[in-house]
Image 1: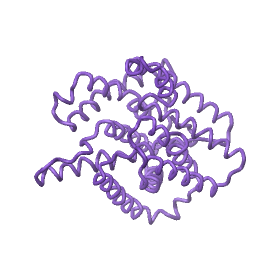
Image 2 (image 1 turned 180 degrees about the horizontal axis):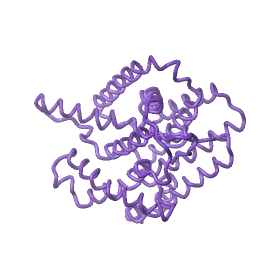
Image 3 (image 1 turned 120 degrees about the horizontal axis):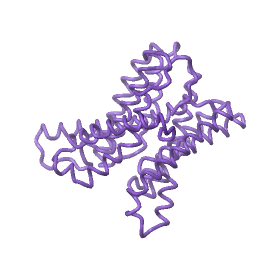
Image 4 (image 1 turned 90 degrees about the horizontal axis):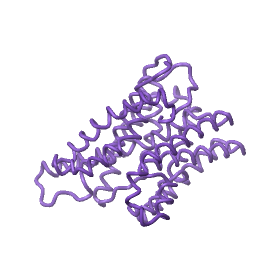
Length: 325
């Protein structure tokens, strides 16, 4: 889901995005719950902490990084390109909403109002597409009225922290989630950061990058640990606001480059994995695969392994249908 604005493709970034898609699966198939083991031994407690740091620490970089990638490859200076990109996203949203609606309709058949609200905000993971669409529109309009880079930075940080503190009130209610996990308070800040990264002089900060990444990674682990102690699973984390731009910039500038090809399976797999994995997840939950396997880690592996061939099939089908990815 990106515009080809450079002559060569970053092959490393393509694989990086596949990894991020798998982290999204981990977000939806966490290794541990918010409740630590009661009277657990040392190994059980260590295992719980490691599982938490992976599921609610490492995996939390995936969505912000995808937002940043969307923003980086967006050309808001061109009305034609922006409309074309938005049209593609809207088609994706409509197609995948129609595909997922049968899965979710039974939950809302007696509450059509909630179904309409939930669908408008995006069923399950499709909120991401709705949020990106909204963020791009806002960024495009701000560019049209000549808001400068400093203004965009201030707005991004301000909106993010407004969303973060809204989240603190009630991070779990479905309708409360819509108030902060949306285009304004989550997508817009990171999409804007991705757009602004194009103007960063990497040579000036290159020597500091290892330290930034190391300190940022440690800070993310600490933030995740704090939430573990509080027994909460926030959507919005503070550290990714600073860590994710640095990580993306590092991959962008140090990745292996290759030529563009008509079809790029690896690049398409990342969005395909993201779009189809809930089908595997919902099927797994329906048939109680998690209970049968008896392990959250094995369930995550099962969903991932099941998703990959389906995602590949979607990639192949899209070469003919042109509306799936």
